[in-house]
Length: 433
Image (cartoon, rainbow, N blue to C red; front, side):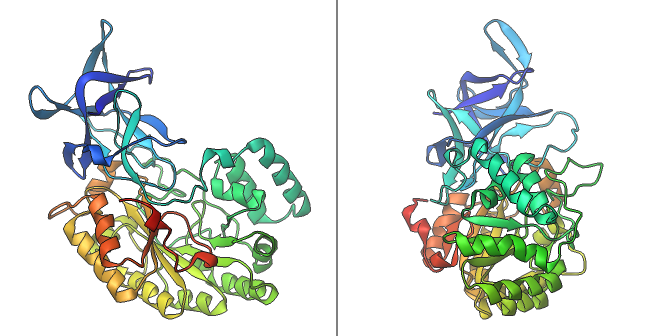
């Protein structure tokens, strides 16, 4: 059995001696089944949800209940819900079980996950969905990183992309930015200072009345040569290298398609090494086609749902529709791109039968290659107020993954972008869902 954990007013985390851990699936408080709990992996962060009251399973009363106060060691105090932030490669299966007695401002944009205590260790409602360990803490040592950043900036002091990535690596501790300077895996190429979506959970821009954005959006507009000067040395020297447009600190890269097409052609005229990738909202199918013909190798299209009303409520698209996104997926596959969807997971919405059926139909229709499971970073209450009320049976995140694997065994499931050396390979076969 896993037990409830709470935070006292000073942020100290305590486990409850008798109340059981609960979770939430959308709006519903549910039990946290043992098969959905894992010991929290290295790199997990625990934090509180201010203004909330934890919910727990009361075995004596045989019911769920809110826990506004607890008594520990002779003292009684108001307590707050504790949530986990899992490292990349792990997908949450339940949200924290919390209720709000009064109206609260939106919580920061983090992927809130149910967490408890099993008597020996913290456990979270999650499962591993990518065997790659590129985010593991042992790969990152800033004592090694900082001299490399200084050396690279000294060689190209005026390049706006490098200046931004140095900031991302040191201020935001962005692992992708760090990997550029460390010379491995995937290099981010932030290029877009505008966007044609107004995502409710956008991590680079938020209105003043909302939760703060996690990053500050870039303000520069790079030239094609700026892009080439960063991407070409990386692709030419790094094994299985990926260079990716579309990052958390920018807007929508398809809005910069003219510059990107020029950069793609220049890069491919110089080398055929490495993978050129674009992370995008897929809003402009014609521009996807232009980039594919210029040398793009892969594309990752982000969406929170394959149901039009749910997609539109969250993305708030400007001058495009959900059907344009679907068409971009079709064209990308038809033009030979390795095509991935970046599936923003929210337990209790993502794993409804209606959503699953629509996802299976999308795979069947387009032949997409990979589904990247990415925990949606948003205040759970805000998201549930934003999208249409979930309807129908909830099958669970684990069953969703099992169904995809059964129906489409060639479709890769994961988290990290794949280099072209691994196109067609299913690393997820090593994982048990």
